[in-house]
Length: 519
Image 1 (tube, helix red, strand yellow):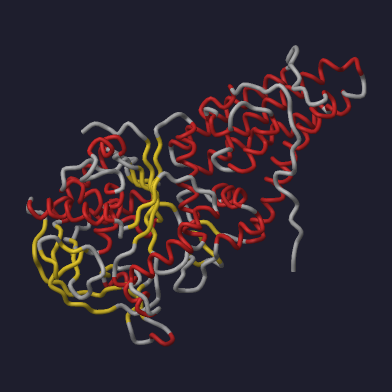
Image 2 (cartoon, one colour):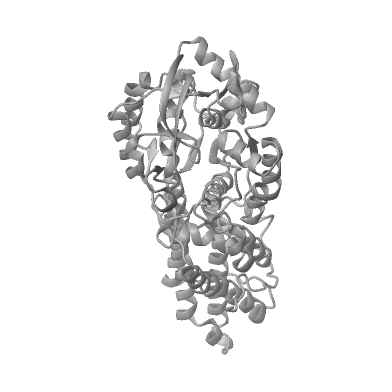
């Protein structure tokens, strides 16, 4: 099967049983930054996000709030999940809900094909079920309860008791695909990233796969099994299919061929579903497996994974209301090695905002624009004969461009930002060493002053292009002040060093204003 002509990237679709926290926003921003980078490199790029709205947990939450599950989902999507995208400045191309008719109809089409082709059978299942995870648990995944749950087995993730269920269900023959999955991981070592995630997936599959129970008959909030309407499709089986139903599966063959396969970004806690069960489902249906699955780490607060059920979640707006969306985007992707767990602290966020954004990048931008205005009445100076120091800045511009693009292609977002930040630091060092304010005092140094500020101005424009996926608001303001043509998002990021300079600069307000400490 031919590869898609586009770059298609997805976030998980998030469960609407409650409001989003910064862990959800972290995944959204990571996918958005990668999508923006590819889009700005001239690729036909498509980013999908959305919400998962079926399952027992939603039903129970809705019932507890005295509304129907659909009313509950509609309310949460409108009041919490879609506003999240605005809060952290996400430029997604589509938003899918598992209650969308385009999704439900084509889930049934996919399921019917697997049933017709013999990949689904009837069986009975008894096991420990965690409603929070919407997943049957092995005993190794349970721990003894404490406090009010003492004497009971609880889910290791949610710390709440599991339920012993006995159901007659339909099963997907996951075990039949173990060898093909192992061959996939062998042939495409980068299919699951990072390496720690790949090793975990290999361990799961080598230890033996159980067939997956893919229906429920004890409640009715879900997609009906097409050949047996007394069952609804298991919420995970339903949810994973969003990646293809949104891309045209079952209804628009040309769009599907254009988009699929996708690169999936997921939290490592849902890696097994995405790197094992999902490709097995696609193999069974005769479809291409994803481009890849990247399992990123958890955000830790006080050394513990954030959780809505444990009340350790932090709302993204708690951060953006003070620091702004650009700082949110920068901090989480710069401070944490993408793929590893990372600890959040207000102190670290505040320190990085001040040192790296306000003093490092923001102050650099303000100084350069101000000096062009002061010494050349806003007319962009032309470089004369260039010294080794000037040529080194040009070389770093090219190096930062190439290195950041290469890092994004490895989904090493923190490395991409780090590569760009070398240019921030080099430009700050260059201005300190060249002292344009001192050159300006002597007319004999006029030509040298022009070259220094032309070099700094050009480097600043390269920074605006390179940082636009991460800091879309600040770089748009900077681009306007630089007098660049069009918008900064229209500039080729893979050729960031080759941007066309403007004729005049404007004025620039502080990109990252000082934030006064409040008690």
